[in-house]
Image (cartoon, rainbow, N blue to C red; front, side):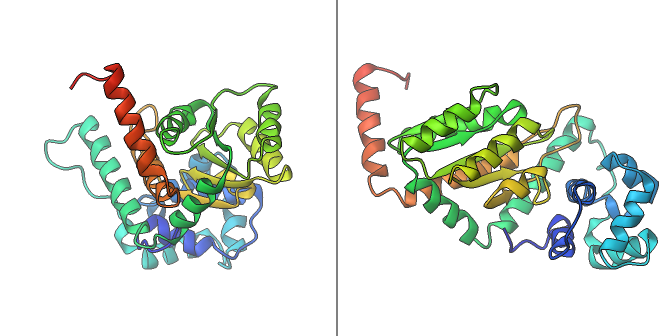
Length: 281
């Protein structure tokens, strides 16, 4: 996605066009996730954040074309001037701060959606899939389940893969044999190795992989054909995923736009639900 002038988007622009090692991609991923803090971190602090060695951070800066990390940090302070963390608002406790941070993530998502082309492309790809495979494991299982629940109301055949194990590849193969052409993956930290293996297998089997992830530099980027980033909140003990969830709903809308009978299917479902008394009004 483009169209955003947020600190995270500016960082992503800085990294584009560089061939980064897996360790360097991990550093880039960590920087994007904590874009507001990065221009003010030392190399040691960034190394601790990314879980790598301090020399790895130095080599990363050199790979981007800088003399070393201090030069990279000076550059970041120039090109990401809005990234300085705002002081804690008076009277806001840690729970409120987590909400404020999520609001900021949603604002960045809104800016990214100023260019709707990637989402529209993803919507067309998902609408054409018969069946449509939706994958999400561990932290992302809830996002995948929510998307599949609503998608099944408008799409003729949705197959949810939200449990790992030795049968995961088998289920992907079965979907391919049934005619599947696309797989939608929700990938959130911490990223299970099993997801990367499953996406690599899906691409080898001929599926187009569309991924919603927390960063354009998430580990799943290398095994995705189209990656749509939406940041997660990191202020609480467990990450919060309001932006990825909303991006999933936006994808649903884009998919509906390319399903000519989507509205008819919704009306049919509503009629059946009313006849069965499914919902309390």
